Length: 226
Image 1 (spheres, rainbow, N blue to C red):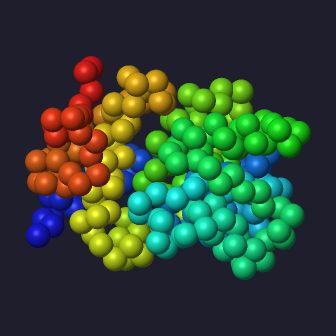
Image 2: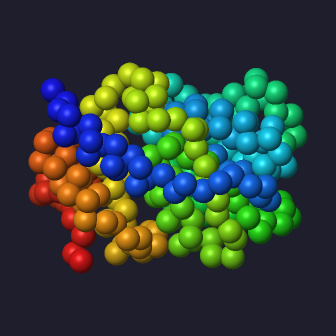
């Protein structure tokens, strides 16, 4: 049973995870691979609006996507973009990345190898991964401007599209945990997390929305040392 308080806390996390950037023309759009083809759809929409002359999709497979996207996340994203009318010549695939850090590093390196000058990146992710993607890119790709983007969905829209409210809440909680612990591990820049967001996160953890949390070898949930 998901309570009214659970939904209020989830909405607070959802709002925090989104950066609120206004899309603007950038050197390239980079769509981060996942189970969600909505990332590809958002990239296509932004491309058609003239926000980037080139799209790069990055991602291999994961346990979540192996069956649904057997040819790899980036490949399936590319197929989706072409199906929606983007010229094949405007889509690049980076097929090896298996986490957000690799998404950024491998994309950066592949663009450099291709001689493509990049001063700004339209970084497209799932709605609740905007802040994590931004924080990772700011750590690993200092010389470019990062503009975060995702499908313009409300929390309820996203839950309806996934069809599993508990899984969505678990994913939002897991994404917040990573924002708290990954800066200490050197994976992303640190960002301020307000007390209300932290309180919502703690309540959801206590409520059992923990399937996406990282744990230590003893099964204990990892926390920040700060």
